[in-house]
Image (tube, rainbow, N blue to C red; front, side, top):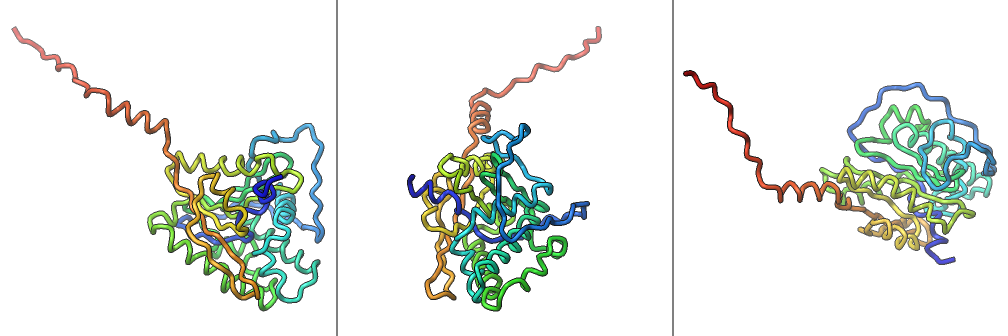
Length: 293
C-alpha cells in the first residue's frame, strides 16, 4: 500500500471551521442530537437495503450517531485534533470524549447548514458547507450546542482551538480568497475513510460528487489539510497548495495546509458557446405587408 493510500483517511480539517456567509435560515423542526457512547464501534449493517457502495449518498439527521462514529474513527490520531484535545493532561478516555463533543457539534452544524455524504455502509464520509451558508451565526450555535463547546476544553486547549487555530484559518482564507469569492465557495471541512476501506478510491468519489457541482456553477472549493502527506492526494483532486501555516503553542509546531481548487472548464457549456460563435447570424424573414389595391 502506498503512502497516498495510507493517507486517504485524514485529509481534511479535523475541526468544524466556521465559514461566514450571507444566508440566514428559518427555524425548522429537527430532532435532537443522539447520545454517543464513549467507545464507539462502527459495525457494518448486513442489510438488503444497503445503499449502493460505489455511489455517495447524502446523510440526514437519522444518520447522526453513525456520522459521529465514522468521524471519530477516521480522525483518530490526527495531529491537529491531538494538538487541542491532548494538551491539558487528559487521559485517553477524556480526550476521546472531547472528540465526540467536537464531532457531534460539527455533525449537527453540517446537517443543518451544509451537506454530509457517505459511501457504502459509512466506509467514508465528507462534510461540505455550500456557498452562502455560515456555521457560526448565533442561531446555529444555539441549536447545535456550539455555545457550550468552549467549556468542554481544558484551559490550554481552549486557547489553541479558539484563539489560535480558528483565527489562523480565517486569516488564510482572507489572504487567498478574493472578497467576491470568499462567500461564494464550497468548503470541505472533513473528508475521511475507515482503515478497512482505504485504497478503494472512495475519497475521490466523495470529493468529485461535489466538485462536479462546483464546476458546473463555476465556483471555487477550499479546505485545510491537517496532514502533509495528503497534499499529493488533494492535488489529484484539483486542489492547489496556497499556504502552509503552523500552530506553535506546542513544543513541536503542527502544520496546516490551506488549499484551493479552481473550477474546471465546463466542456458542454464551452462547446455551446463555440457553436454559437461559429453560427452565422440569423437573418429574420421580411415582415408581411398588407397590400391595399
